[in-house]
Image (cartoon, rainbow, N blue to C red; front, side, top):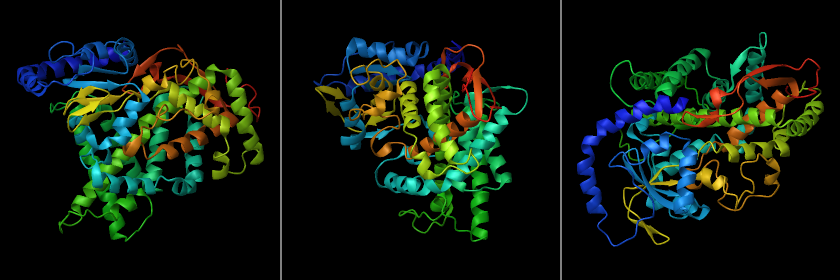
Length: 487
């Protein structure tokens, strides 16, 4: 109920602010729906409020699963002022995200678009999106990130050492994983950034992060207003970094360097200011994409390994073989070694399936679309439900059991989409897996940990993580070779 208590006041404020617009919106929708086509089954709930309260007063996954059980794999609802069509089958997800992606555009609340920046690639489609995506991917392909193994390893070792410092202090796993993922994100974008700039980025990014999911209001002192001001300062910091590079005539091949060489085809001689905004918006977008999702998966892996001693022993055996090959950890990990961790990789895949950090994605129909005899009206939101697919026993037997061995055989097409699918899938998935593999290697070969307090429950903020961010104690393994992994 903790997340419900924190979110509900914002929902009520939103609904009360928008309720006055309902009559006009209802009239528009009724006019729009005067067709002979058939809408999907489902419930639209109360006027304007729809089923928002039902969604946020319980585990969202229970809400979606209950709807699917009652109405089938395609159903309608109405949440946060928007009529929506939910899709819970692999075929439907592929229809929206891949084969007919041109009929659906990415959609986000305007408040979030303003927070990150309107030029960020995930707010766009078409040629501009294609160009920006290629640019981002050029810094995140395996050929590029393989050169960063040693740098990521240094970040991972430093983080683990700091968590284990002191007299077995309790740390919030999720919060610490966010810090780790942020450091790796900065490394992938800027390379070795000056500490002065890194700290300024971190200070302001933390404020933006706290206000990202808050109620959007211009009232001074609110989390959202503070975040908007911090976002402006982030843009200024990035501008300073770019100006310094230009003055020093530094031409780096990192992601920021790629953006600085980017030219808009329609800029018509307006100078570099617009390109700088494109760079700033996309750098901040990549930082957002690189942090919470990876941190959430890492937090779940800590819990899943802790809860399954036999699995932990097997993963430990795999990692200790590499550890010994490297002279007891005296030599660094290599790219080839990170590609040869089959069991650990299956643990990551199963964690992605079980936790389903990205439970669904938003699209909006740009025209009236017919799918399997149902009408998806223009302007309606469309939500492929990844978690429902990942937890469907037809594709994953005993879906609520953590079983990495299920990935010894490749999943059926379009049944496993932890990073999305199609042209808007996550371009940083290889970097995320690399940093997870490196951290797990050093965690299991050199440290032990235990969960503190309750070991059950999930909180949403908005991504699912274990209750209270999974408080743990972590310490160095004094034996020189881990014996039990954790208590």
